[in-house]
Image (cartoon, rainbow, N blue to C red; front, top):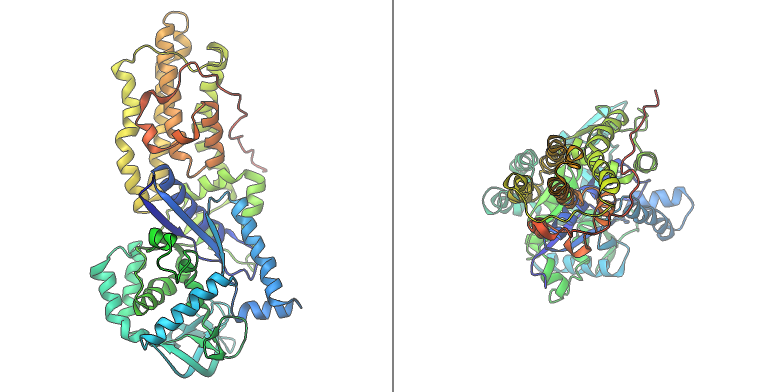
Length: 515
């Protein structure tokens, strides 16, 4: 029985357009953490989904002459399909148009009313329909007589309407105490934390949490002309998936508070300021961490239609493969920073790291054993001391690898694991099993067993990043599903001698440049 639980979420995506690289990146990152925690013995809940309310969706549906709910169904299905395309291991897919979500939002609203953190007044100010966000005067700029949000570049419009307000200003000191004393790692990386602290210290204004100018959303109880602000609605999804407001439900008791919300830096304010303030006011425990990753840049520029530099994840997967994309994004992008990607660097990464290193190691060893050992894992009587250092190197580094994951240092994690692969290739070249076949077959068997064991360990460690390819390798080695975990890496002799190696195609074909 697993007694360790781990709850991780992606942002829920606003399905007003087709999925892009930013969606893919957030989802892949969250999936890697979820998969690692599973091989580390945790019971994991991994949530993703779609945020389907608000004026933007209502306008898009009208523009397309479609019923709003049917329009959402169509768009949401594309994001659900994306979970399959990206090979995500999510346990749930939440939609804000579901009944379970409606129940959660209504309960949160009732709690905020009961705590007297909501009051009725009038809102005057700048609002971006695209961002579903309010902006102060110092956060907008004028271009060609039109107003735009400086941070996102989205058009803003002046709004005057009756509105319910949340007393965000009264939670300023408690938020600062959260960031600086109670949980200094509530926001990561450190640059995002500093950004939020500076923003909060400037002073927080009460937040408009309802709109009257459209109807597509969850109506305010007892005053249905008001629609609950889309972010108060959307953020509650993290609780909806746990059958909240039933706080005695096993799912809620096991998984709340969430361990980590993975988000893009553009929605940091909503998750790191509004969300904890709503929860504190509602007297609900806070999530343990919000991690705001950077943007994915294309050739050092933010992707945009006007620049024509948008990289479509679906097209890349069709051409290069899903494991290849997952590996590349993990290795080339330092998680907390903006990441610059290009098709050229993707090609080089596949050829150098995957085809020439890990893939080549597997192919060389499997091919040699097929020709020289009847395709069986060699039987070994005893190991020499110098053979154990290779596996000990990995076993001794597992605590460090675990720490990398717990601190969201994916870049460091993958570089360390790939170094193990380089070391294994070097060991193979140094020991030269091909020259031992005639004169010292026992030693040849030791070297081959040792290198197969190393391939097994490296494959388990790479499995959260490249699940398809690594599982093919582990299938070849006859490693049982229940043995594909960190604990089994420490059991050096768990690789069964005499097992027939299954046939395997080339794992990673080298990519030829189109030029």
